[in-house]
Length: 204
Image (cartoon, rainbow, N blue to C red; front, top):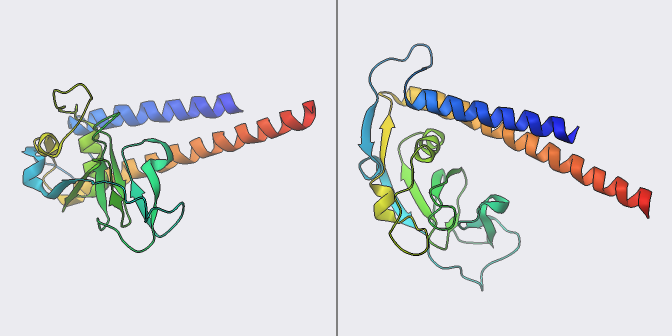
């Protein structure tokens, strides 16, 4: 059952990759949309592009109202929580600036970015923008440690469809796919935990 779920997960991820490539090269489009996509720099389309600051250890809690988000990919990037304060009003798109750089993710609620996590606010559909940024190869600073900075991210050249409606259709599609991927991942984790529990009970 675990193997079957993992096969389903891999097939879905492959399908998502293929769809991203086909949509962002305009080989396929949603019915009813036409017109040419235009290439623009992110800095010309964003309201703001900022980098997160330092963690306030005195305020950091293990649970709370407003997540504190860093560059980690585990635990959805959440390092902890602040109870009464936040720096960014969601929705916004975060982009990892250190470690495994250039990975974009939509953040719906209010949050605080830290350890140089990059944040993009724009009028564009956030789920579309997440996909558009993830299609780009990161423009890294030439240092010993891989690092994506605000100026480099701001100079990303992204393709945008002529209407917000098309952005919303694309964003909704990939948001649904991401939700399905997350659900399958969660199912695999639950089955593996059940397996571990059964093994411990049977062999102890």
